[in-house]
Image (cartoon, rainbow, N blue to C red):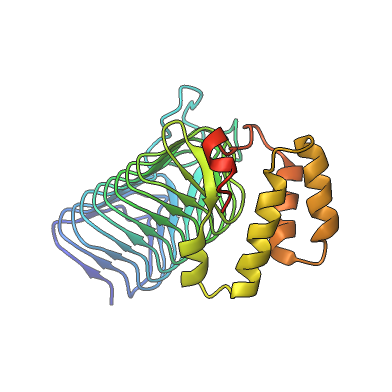
Length: 269
């Protein structure tokens, strides 16, 4: 049987799995779906066309599915989809999409969103990501799997962050961040590879060594960037991790690529 505190306000049209727990003073709107094992601790607001996946826990004063913070939004019936086994801490905000975007904001599985972090409209967040306190991403941002955003980090609208990347605390990321990369500073610059994250996630010494070699070649001083990119693609064509970086760059996006500053080029990884 669903465990709903008597002070919670639940619209009768909301889809609530019998195993869901809803604490005191929560508010759940008519287009919300809460799947198996979801827990709203207390004082949580879930509204709009919002789906929360299995086993996700939402802590007090989080606000999920309220209208996007976009002047272009005119009340369209867009959605927010949150995956399974996520942890959403206090004061987190996540907004649905807009019709100028995909019409949907999507969050993957097994992510942690620490207090006061923010996911804006039309964003896509992958699996196993961590947003530290006050980290925020603007509209239309794509965050791939295993990305870590440090405290108070901010990501510009339409940016892309590749898998296994790290954004340092208080960094202001204006450009796209390559997979396995690490940035710091405001405005953020590419500081090297996310070596700590790679080691923690079980990458071998050989894998890390190859990534470092490719990184050094890609961001060397000689030749043009496109020439170096072609050289990396040719030399490391059988290396899956390096080719993820190459393909990420070649795919392009709406933002420029985040590059090393002059001082960091000689200390590439």
